[in-house]
Image: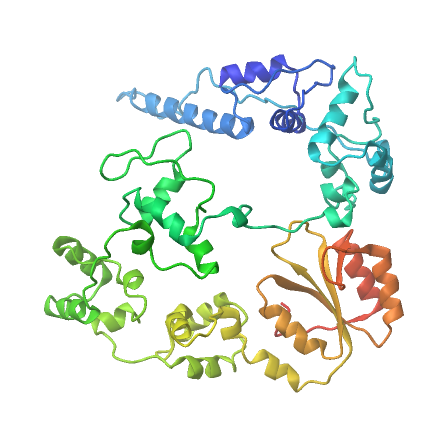
Length: 488
């Protein structure tokens, strides 16, 4: 740790923001120049990137070890004193950050317009531009001093910062949403991947997890002590998820090539628990471990499992079926699992399970898509169908998108009902709803002031520069519609 501290002080990196800029330059292959214009060497292996956290942990361990040493040297006549810590000082490695004065810099929009001439395409180009300004021998273009090195920090003060893509003036069509499974088109078929998996000689899912978690620089040994071949890039890590999407997945025994153990019928285990007078989970775990029976029955017998109380025979009742339970909960209008769980813990109804995933097997057998939100909020649409239809505009955003400023603006005469449907979707959340009063031209004016149409998506999708200002203008222009049972 002392070597790391000497390295930082030798290269005259004074503040934490400067250190983060240095680490970013290192990982983006850009030469870092300190404020004196001196180039700094690459990050050594003995210096951790998160140096502040490592230093804090180092001092805590040092203090703890000294305290334990001092407590062993106590004598009968010695008075109780606080342990003295020698040769340990809390090192202020970084100076306090200087006060940021917004008047020293151009505004966000002015800076954004100015850097258009540099044609920046990525964060690496920006780092190079910043370092060119510090290089005294530089002859290429560089950033002026009235544009901050860390605009994401400076422009947060006046709430004008959006994101790096917007600051670099990247065009709308180049803004990409999150794309999962980058090599999806290059993956092998299930049968070809299964042939490779059989050569690894694994006996279960956890072997595959250990194998995929093993660093590329190390060899993975199977249960027979043999070195396994490296996983090719054409086989996904989450094989079950990928091949279930393609409709090829069979089971882990089929994929890895091992024989699945024959499960003991749950009724047999229940009879054993009754004969041995076992009435608690802890007692069952001890009994099962001793006699080599399965311990965690809920995960193994998920298709017929109900509860531990029913397994031990302490209660003898059955739950409502799927449709009866759904009809009953529609009167409650729960929106989240947490709300349902709190209600269940308080009321403890004997006719409903605490974990609604109990009905997942029924949905699977009857080809019904199981969704907790759909299950809980099944009566919301019916509830709002009886309300007066008003023309509303509702604004929603996406949970799984790459840029945080992508929104959807929708106008509908039955907006209350559609808003309830929005709440049921996993990838969207409602930001606000307003009474339109048939004034679409005024809505277009407000949108034009704060938003830009997102050409990479649907017609009602926009890129908004600032959520807060946009919603405030909407509230000042239109009457906000509040639904207490939906929006909390």
